[in-house]
Image 1 (cartoon, rainbow, N blue to C red):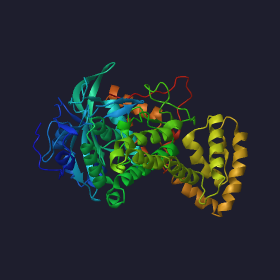
Image 2 (image 1 turned 90 degrees about the horizontal axis):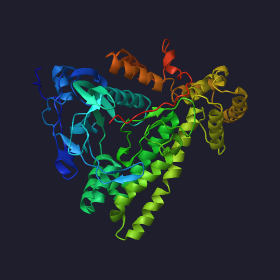
Image 3 (image 1 turned 45 degrees about the horizontal axis):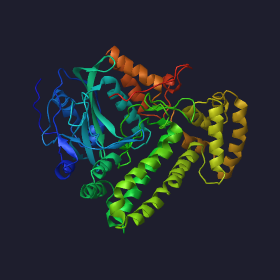
Length: 494
């Protein structure tokens, strides 16, 4: 393969230049016979890259790790983290390499990272590789989240390597090229704090402020303002997750970004039938990261970030703890405000009423009791506004339970004074008809892994790019899986 390529990336690698101690220099391992799985032309153009030039043999050499693009400085980042509540003082990128940073067409700084490119100093005995299934899952779910309006890391490219990956069975290897606002995590702060290196924590905080929240630099207490800004971004993010029935599965502190983007789509999934205790992760035996627990874990994780900032919020530790605790106590009402705003929109309300929380929670309880599909209930509510309640009623085991709620909803809706069709259209713009249904994702991944057939993956990817627009012929993508006695499980992919 000819791996000669003219410069495609205008790298400006501020993290590698200025954050010594938070990374190790590293190179990707070679891929035997790489081939394309998927290339994201739209994202490439958003990044200011030459999409046509990169969708080539020379681009394949870059995204498979066989050629380091000019100007890149591959590094594996260091971080720590609480994993299922237990603290690990050193984790880090065990199978990822940050190639560098680019400035996109909107003047935003973005990381470009290879994931699955081989061992790093942080691999802890792992092979540093990724299999095709987890790579394509992250590609699918990340792009679906983008289309749903949820802040997320994204996939620029997915390639198979021609190298085998050994898990329970032998699987074909692959590499994902991931794009993020940055890969700085709560665990990155914990890494320096665990080493009692206040200078490094301050350096990281200053870098994060400059990169993500520059307005906080001018605050009376910049580090407190920074913490509040991260909390706000994360509260908004988790409220969005809850509004679409998304379960991350591994809300460890090393999987929570400072930027407020969703990251690390391992054992993640979307609920079909609404059940607040739903857990999909095969390793979450106690349900720590169940759907209903995500808001509380949000607060717990942010408290861990606050602990690293204590020395900079106030010279007196006791005073700093008091100040940060006051901010932490504001996170729950902040989250609830974001959640309520989103849920009001989902049921077609454009004004506020104190009874709305009870109205929404009663719908959720009715859905839980009736094993109703989370996504379709909200989507079909708009048809009830148009005069046809049959679609949404049919989702409940006992439709009369829904009927009682619907009467209350209509009375509340009439207070808004907005036409039914106007509200129905607004609801359709926030309630998706298509999400990454677990069974459709598994069908696409199985075809790609075991049959080398990417057609189901590409079709599903195309459908998920327009989650709010119903198209004839795509009915199968909107339906939940047939009932089964076997609980759906996902795996971290490492």
